[in-house]
Length: 248
Ligand code: NDP
Image (tube, rainbow, N blue to C red):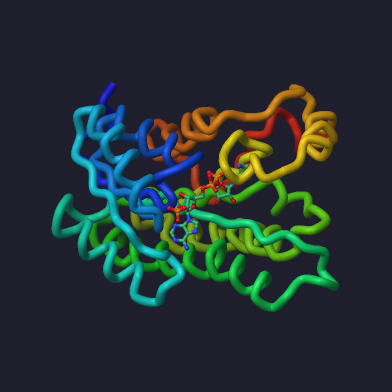
């Protein structure tokens, strides 16, 4: 069903992994899609896949941590596709280290990408959404923001920050027809999780009640529901998609 026909969806980090799966799913549901990333080749490849879903697609090369990124990206999308109805703040990085050896750069890079840029993109989206009295924002957080994880002080602090940001923004704009939620993936099969060595992977699998890794499409299904009208009364929530990881 083309439930998102006429809507414009912007997905950061939409060229790979979870973001790509979300972009494809929202395209299937009829939305016009803009994806943002830094890798021109991946953006081109994914844009072709999205256009196969018979919708319009805009692939944008932009580093979301650059001060001008949100302004430039939103005005380009507005000119080419119309103003953004749905923002999926998905782009993220890891730079793991134990806290005592973590460099300022490792800390700041992760905070800038996974928290600061997310706020700038959400703030920019909200300005138009408030005027239109319509909007859907989904932040992709992580179970690590809920539980903590040794070696990921920067990452878990940023993701927990997004959870607080979600609740605050949801309450601020609940009366303006805007819903804001976050989805917390557990261990999901993408380039990001491929970096984990096989011994560590085996250990992680033991902590997942379902005993398997998640697929990007399983995150995308929930995101598609949250931006649909069927989820109109859900706002300010963080929902884990993790095979039961956070329930034990
Ligand atoms: P990938 O590494 O596969 O993809 C990350 C995406 O973010 C890429 O599309 C990348 O685009 C984009 N990105 C990173 N930094 C920037 C930047 N500065 N500017 C623009 N785009 C950027 O990761 P996943 O798909 O696995 O992760 C997606 C989200 O899900 C992240 O927020 C991650 O924290 C979260 N997550 C992932 C889990 C997992 O197990 N995979 C578990 C829990 C949460 P490009 O390379 O083109 O710059």
